[in-house]
Image (cartoon, rainbow, N blue to C red; front, side, top):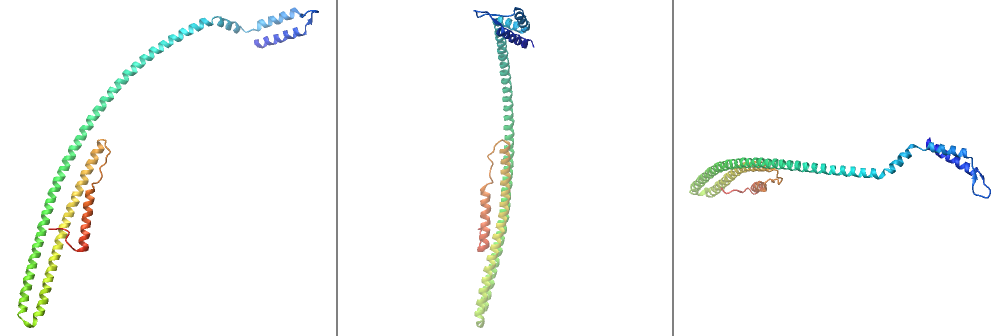
Length: 275
């Protein structure tokens, strides 16, 4: 309200001057002294005290600016000192954490290396044991197959020799009789053909038996290879490696060849194996 009264008094003062009577022959005018003084007193009383304070501030501006600058420099120097101290502490803490992390990493690497070596040793022992067992099984199966094949071949040869001997004896007996010579020849040829057919059948059965035994041994070897590959896969995965080992193609090729041999034997009724 005090500021509003100042402007109001100024407006009244302007109105008084504008309405005052002019002095003849001059640019002056006659104003009521009492009213003007009263308005001037109102203006003086209505001026806020903050203007005096502002003037004091303006008078002390340089001093305040100097004090503020010195305070700012002091605060800046203190902040720089504190920041350097904090930075030095942070560097020391970072070096300590880095040293501890490096020691932890070295310890973990050593533990991982020891664990990987243990896994490799276990896998090598297991692979050697399975390989030895497979070799023994192979020798046993092969020996039994060979013995069975030889026994079958011997039986077939004996049967063949007996059949041939019987045929020859029968042929010689029939030859002595003139009226049955032709029948004797036919019977002898039939007996000989039957003997050859029996020998071929026995040899085929022997080949099939040996093939079945070898197929069983092939399945054992395939299972052994799968176990070894799983062990290698687990070992590589535990050591943090990702070059996964594929299933050995040689096993699939062996199985494919065995199926082709079986199909060839079925279609051609031949012997896929040499005993």
